[in-house]
View (cartoon, each protein chain N blue to C red):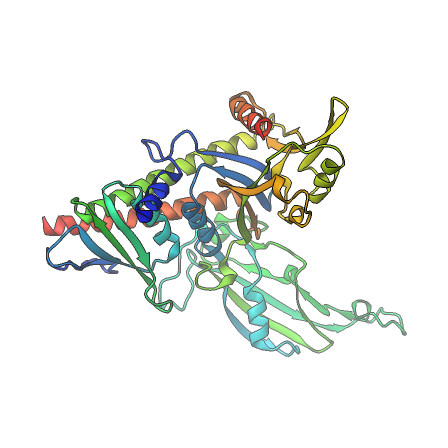
Amino acid sequence: MAGNRRVEEMRSRVSLGEFGVSDNFRIDVLKMSAEEIEFDMIGIDAAIANAFRRILLAEVPTMAVEKVFLYNNTSIIQDEILAHRLGLVPFRADPRLFEFRSEGDEEGTEIDTLQFELKIRCSRNPKAAKDSADSEELYMNSKVYTRHFRWVPLGNQADIYEPNSIGPVHKDILLAQLRPGQEIDLMMHCVKGIGKDHAKFSPVATASYRLLPDVHLLAPIEGELAETLRDCFSPGVISVEIINGKKVARVVNARMDNCSREVFRHEELKNLVKLTRVRDHFIFLVESTGALSPAILVMEAVKILMGKCRRFIAELDADENENA
Amino acid sequence: MATLQCTTLFPLFFQLQAEGVDETCVTFVLHEQDHTLGNALRYMIMKNPEVVFCGYSITHPSEDKINLRIQTKGVPAIDSFRRGLCELTTVCEHVLATFETENYIFSRPEAIGILHHGNLIGTNTVWNQSVLTRTCQENHEK
């Protein structure tokens, strides 16, 4: 029966050994920098790879501005627009050292809040040239950047954190523009949250994966056709080599293919190439916004999935003990 | 088995009886979960040969819960639910351990990236030599 066949195919699609995952499972880190990591996960199923991706986007916590206390805002940027922009600024603070704020807690404590102050006033620059038109020259503090934030340590935070280690990730994000006489005076509370609640809490610029493309040549392709084939794909996928005086095409690096499927537009090449994907080879690309390094984000995501499973196992145990 | 109710402060799940007094066909309602856990758990539970049917659904997108239904040949469904959870935890532990090892190897100063057929493979430290050879072989087979 077709149903049984499908179930069997699903059960055996990715073989898991005695301990859950057999030797077939591999992770290869290809590129790693402070902002980005590119790694391959081979031998795992799409359901779990997707779970990791979803957790990276929505459930790894970060610190972001939640409450803005405005004392004075005479700029032309409205209060709520300014507050919205402040919320989206990424902060360099390790969220694992903080706790979530409990419900209904208005005052921030040192364990769940970071406080920043922004106090800036624009004035005319007396030393500017008479006929200059550049606002940078004419006015002082006409542009409000994130480097104007000042950290206000709460409780014992000054002893725990270095003053330069807490602050916005980028110092040159433009928040507002001012003209002489305008001023902004506000206090912001940064709390821990997850992307599910608001996208500002998402720790990744983006986290995505693609499957490794698989290019198979069904018949030997020689001569001019080999050159055409090579030009149909992204550079580096197909190489044309001279064997016994003839040009022969060979698939060198299917990974570099960006799946344009140009080959199917050529009548003579259409039936000689099979384009598929390797079903259990995932190429992940995770870009961090700066709070945590991307490798740490991936590890946190895996730990969060483990945490979910463990919570339910604990629930099951608690139930059993009650009814025993 | 009568309907169970969790008595913890935040009830995470409770069991719904579906087919009379039968513990092999059960629908679990998991609160505050979505496709993230639902799909991964469904996949792990289906791997169990005792399970005849396993599926999950989000009853309404505005409600934050999933229905997970398990039907087994004879084993109590709650056991295969627990087994699926344990196996998923094991998979996660294995992934974490593998990733941490790879991460450590990659960031060691003596590890250098090498180019092979225009493909940046990764490190070529002695430990990883078998991985390197395997990747080279795969490329040759194509």
